[in-house]
Image (cartoon, rainbow, N blue to C red; front, side):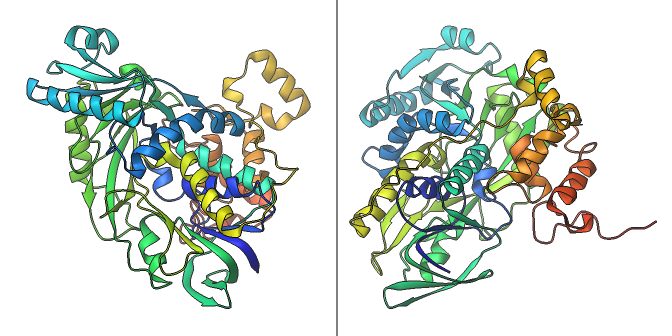
Length: 477
């Protein structure tokens, strides 16, 4: 198959870049090596839209973080993705750390972040009654928000597909050849040709760049372990609470999520295997011991799951975005670690601009629709709204996931959506079926059954997350 643009990597950056390019009369393919989008760092990060005070002034991180915050609200409105502006605090636990808050305050002002201020103990306790006893002051950043990173990504891919882009799963790029002004991508789904290639491959972006002889990108996977606590703990913090950052990142945070849980993490452990997302006792111990410093009431008795993700830390310590020196039609989007999620809409805007500049004369589609229709969220409806919905479709009257109040109708919608779910985790990310306290213990088998029925495939072919994750193998009776 031949395309104008091939985007490698369906994380949040790749998804929103593809959506942005789908505004134009271009043939676009979004290639993902996994069985679904949002399968890398995007599904395992802190879910924070950072205000923009941390990045070094003048860096791409600083510029795109602030611009990303400006764009995030309209992006989420168009894609019908919940965004909550809850604010953030960076807490000092000794007088010695207060100069660091002052440094972040000045850096934030230089980056153009509004409404920053330093608050001291008395005011801090009023803002966060459960804050640790040793907290003496904090930088307050009211413009910080939270969003669900994988929901944003899924919505972006759905909207791009609706506007004509193709999403190709299980499509790992294994080699890239350059011939007659085209890139020939050898993939696990066959050969793909493209005039322009966008390398948004996350922790593997350095490896992909080397396929065209570009050795300029060195990525070090930096694993982050997290705990997710039950919704009963969601009000332990009202804002995202950071500790003073270190050279390894923004440190362990405690934050509400858009769905009402409490997230705690991450650790920061460098290693050499971008595919390894196993949690470790060492990483989780570090997370817990740091978290209770911020909010002493955090208790692992209320942890419903733990998980880990790999950040694409670049030795250049900044985003790498632009045409490769080897071939200007190969655009690197590499080193997209924090504040990558916050910057994603601005990264999409920037990369789209680079591509359109290279192409020259290309028209925008008159038919482009930026809106992704809101999915049914039965758990958020009133009784009257539920009654009317069930009258139209009885499937919405059958609760499959009791923890999160997710209906069969919602699961069917998720499977048949543009770029819809093909495995149990895909249903989980789109609907929250299996996200509750029992983590799919009751609803998991029903989700498998619905997937098999709706996809018209044998039940033993349904997987948890694609390759090598089969749930059932054969009948025993």
